[in-house]
Length: 261
Image 1 (cartoon, rainbow, N blue to C red):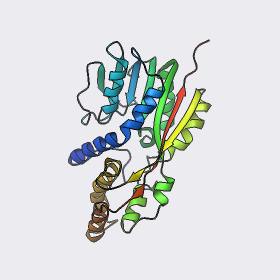
Image 2: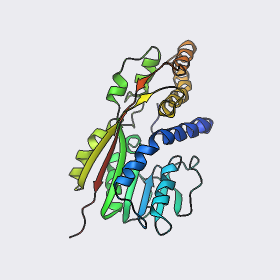
Image 3: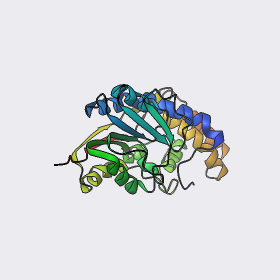
Image 4: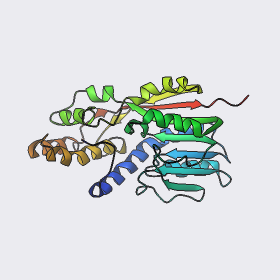
């Protein structure tokens, strides 16, 4: 129903809330994976798809005043005020020139799956690393998320939102392919960690997704895919405190560009 991920002006408020809930739910795990790389004072970091900005600023705190962070996004409206050593850039990772090179760490969370040119972008990110630098990519595999039994008509909407025909630019299972792609491109020390969790209304770990559902319902109504009765039922379901669903499988894939001999 769209050629690429985008946020219209009338969706800005709900998307800002969604990004902040996603950050609240996922940041502890992301921070732990960043720490596992040995991220140190003085390092140069690149955050792709900075979103709400919480990880950009965390990286800034980790690398200290003698380090630096470049935080990029095609939509910087949602980024919290950057701290002193974080530079926020409006930047299209597909088309724009490199925002720097020889980074010690490049991180992206839930970005590449939304880009039709994801493999080209992956090659660009590798080029921007210093020899010995780390690439940390967080992506998903949604197959179990899609196939779980859910009450109707929410189940139909849920499956539709993850149907390739609905978002043809997206590859929601890209995380599972990443380790092999990184190996094919010569990266070393490849490792993968995964996590899933219970998603409930009223909790950040669920509401980031249920807000996405609310944001999508007007589009489905306008397209005639659902009617007002079905939309109301879906809204009731995703507000029901007894609802518990299994999250997508979140995968953190890390790999290192080989050091020079």
